[in-house]
Image 1 (spheres, helix red, strand yellow):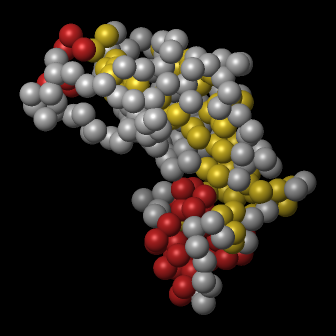
Image 2 (spheres, one colour; image 1 turned 90 degrees about the horizontal axis):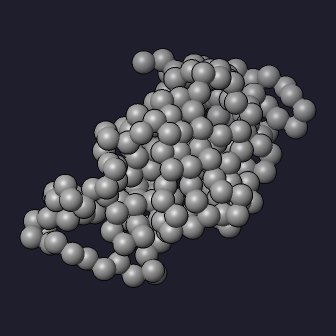
Image 3 (cartoon, helix red, strand yellow; image 1 turned 90 degrees about the vertical axis):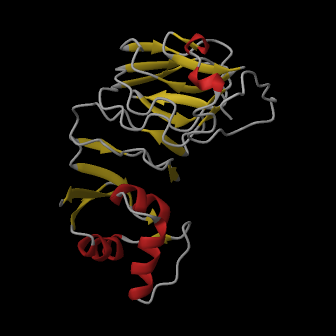
Length: 231
């Protein structure tokens, strides 16, 4: 670990977890950090406090590791067409982040209103949590919300979602584990997996048990969840 000074990563890697190279000689050598960023080959591993407010990921970067920008003070980030993988919680706790830009020719990702989506718009990967908006409409195309996508978005008080929501997405909204949601569902006699959908009434009952108030408002093709967290 601490004596590892060089490493070759194959192109087959599609995910790099948090702390994967922490405390290695590669990580600890300041010469390996360029403008506040640690790269290994074409993989963006981690960042530090030296990033500019508007950061552009370098051309040729293939992957952004889990938690790579976590806690960063960046206000905007621009991804090139070469990025084909973004790790879980890559932009976690970036409280100043208001804009995520993606190159138009990126084959995997796209930006919609400054938020990060998959190219087909089925996956919401990251909401720019530094926005001052108090409401957000999730497109009907979205089928999956990444873990932590809205975590830390303290200005949001109203989220518009499709008429039903999967267990895993509901867990993400409440900042709970899927296991906690499934356990509550079992208490109501509902057998469900993380990919099963639950209706608003069921979601409301569960939210109440977690001390979260959920209000419903009818809208064309949608139902609105007004989520007020009680701490």
